[in-house]
Length: 294
Image 1: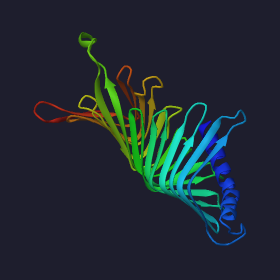
Image 2 (image 1 turned 120 degrees about the vertical axis):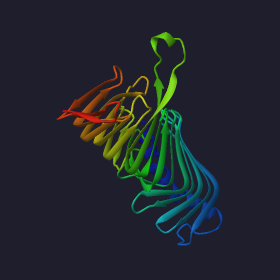
Image 3 (image 1 turned 180 degrees about the vertical axis):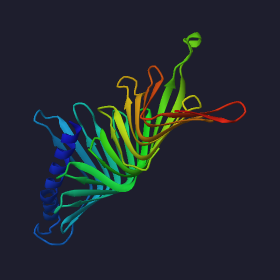
């Protein structure tokens, strides 16, 4: 629903620019057909649905319309949806009327009332492709997860996103207590997943896929897992890591002990690890001599 509202928002907003600027020009005594830039300051435009409810509102300090481009400064856009609202802000913006692409720059920030937040230096919104993208570094936070990376291609509501390279996903985990300490509050742990990229994150379907030099680091009890590719599934209820499936040159390092295999599956509920495809275990004796088990 939010994505549809964003699309309607930009279509209505920029289709409204021409007549709105023409009225401003006429009010100042300038013919509407002039080729000179047309400006407007401290403007606010709103859109309403069929039942009279406000669906979007955009505010800006100034707007300059010249040629095919519309330049806007200090943009604040409010998008009102049935399930989720979003606020999008940026210091500067430019709309290319030929391509239908909106280019936002400087302190770009998108926030939803469900807790998702994206920050970056620039962001392109394509009406035609229905996607947002940037080559700059991005930072996305939602609930107990924070993802950073270089470059993004995503749906406008950021529920599905693809980070291109240099990816880092941090997940705050609730650590379960032993039975004797069941009444005590849970302790928080942290899991960090990095990869060369790309990484695809789907908040709605609760999973993320990582590619190239994937590394998962947890606490001393969890150890470290390394693989060519990995899929991590999250619990819809708790947003905690539920399952990890690794493939290609898998290595699991826990202290001095190392496990190697072609694949691995870890389930968090029972803390079981299944190695697949010619597993090999390397563990050290008290004398420091390695033992290898095929």
